[in-house]
Image 1 (tube, rainbow, N blue to C red):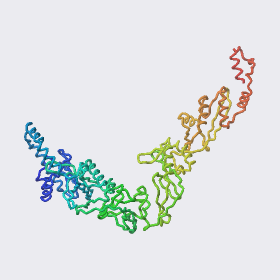
Image 2: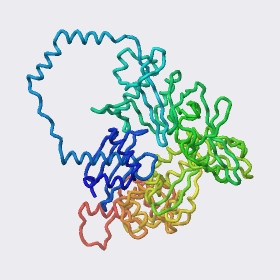
Image 3: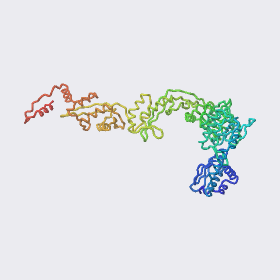
Image 4: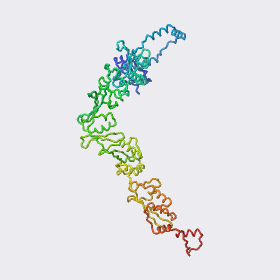
Amino acid sequence: MSMVSLNKELLREMAGPRIYSRGRGYYLGDRVEIIKMDENLVEAQVRGTFMYVVRLRTDRKGTLVTECDCPYDDVCKHIVAVGLKIISLEEEKKNPVVLPPKPPVWEKRKKARVRRMAAWETYTSEVVNRHSPERRWQPVISVEIGHQNWLLTVEKAYIKKDGSLGRRARLTAQDLDKGDLVITPGQELVVSYILANSLNNVYSSYWYTPRSFQMNGYLNLPFGASCGHLFGLLRTSQVACKVHHGSFFNLKISDTPGQIVFRAEEKGKQIQCVPWLLYEGEEYKISEQHAVLTENPLWLLHEETLIQIENVTSYAPLAPFLQDEFTLQIPRKDIPVFLQRVASVPDIISNIDLQNVMEVQEVSYEPVPRIKLEENSKGVSVELNMVYGEHEFSASADEQFSYVFSDSDDRLLKVTREPEFEEEALDSLSESGVVEDDEGGLYLQDEQAIRWLLEKVPEFQEKGFLIEGEESLEQLKVKRITPKISAEVNSKIDWFDVKLIIDFDGIIVTMEQLQKALDSGLPYITLSDGSTVQIPEQWLDHFGTLMKLGQVEQENVRVSRTQVRLIEMFAEEIGAVTADAEYATFIEKLRNFEGIAEHEVPEEFKGKLRPYQKAGYDWLLF
């Protein structure tokens, strides 16, 4: 069905005769305001004890679904009132009202001339002068507590000659400027706040006349609203209050602040945590009989007194305890976990009392950062913990304390944390190149992990970090050892064979592995045992120069005699080169070189050498 097919018979059947009759009274009282309306959905507000939001919609099967945020179940009078309003609007569409013709212009002018007559002006002057400049009105502020919210209302009441308050009327912003209102500076600020914010309040209330409706001074507020400053301005004012459907009483706004303490009590193997109100030397258990109207500051309604709480500012920690039959019970063994979870909630952790159930001892230690490494599908997970004495916790820049049981479980230890030190450690880890995943964990990917393990771990160890789990890495294990590098030089016809020996703790690097590292531009080599090592970059540069200018053949590098200086420079760098006697003689000749000696051409040679050929022959015999 659609809203068009809604009818009175269906409403009467859904609600029953009694509820239908009450809803009809609301409709006739013009208490319904349509907010949104289309063929399948209607949203409206109904002014009852509070302003209620009603929704009527049709589901996919065409069934009418009704919703109302009042405390009553099933189809209530507010839903009936909205339904009748919808029916009325649909009937107006089918039978539009024909407006009477506009009066002729001459008739309007006739009325205007009457208003300009001297007698009329004299009369209006007399009426205005009858008003006394005395202040004859007083603002009336009231608080109405509901099940799900509360209402803050402002009206004005006429002050009778005997000083009592008489009829009431709507108070507007213009009334604040007329000068006939008895109002304190605090009341004026509160009234201005209510009037200004009621224009933007979704649940603002309306009052109706037969001709039209106008915005009234109502604020429909949630519990724990952020307007606690208002009650501080009303300490000396008279404020009326009504709880649920009870009678109004004079609300006392106390000058004496109260406190909240969360007290732990033994309940078998469970620890029950209960908030208590401490006020004027007495203690009261917080329950559903209380209400928290605002936060920052927090104002708590206790019986007929509104009390400002000085040690708790937030509504959230108290909210569950204001529900019917709510209890908070924690297994004794889980007390440290519970306290750690609420450690970041100052309103709880600063006001919890455990003295009735266990001894609490505060201890301090020097913090030591520990990095834990573990392989996973992404690479290597990285976790930073803080070690305080014998206790270890996840690093945090927010934790002031952590809680653990002592070894004998008879005492609860409150371990003092150093959040600034932990924050610096976290920053150092973040700046080292670790990556954060979607769940907030830290990890290193393959190639990045190798570099981090080889280069960053030693830096962290120098800073005093403990490293755990590195020895368990299999796919990404590394060895931070300095290789032993040497070379063997053997003389050939017109070249030298240089054999490079790079020894990592007994494992020799092959020329193929070395060439692969040079091609990649990274100083890392994976050894035959699966571990990765790092060659000092300056040595890698020397290897690269030698292998580029020479010729790599299997495990040797062939170097021309004309480039023998390369071998000498390499030998000077590593300091561990062995060579045969011919190489030593050749080097000695170079060091004592004064020129190329001329040699006789063998008699067996038939022919004549040109000058450059003869010079080449002499060089070969050098």
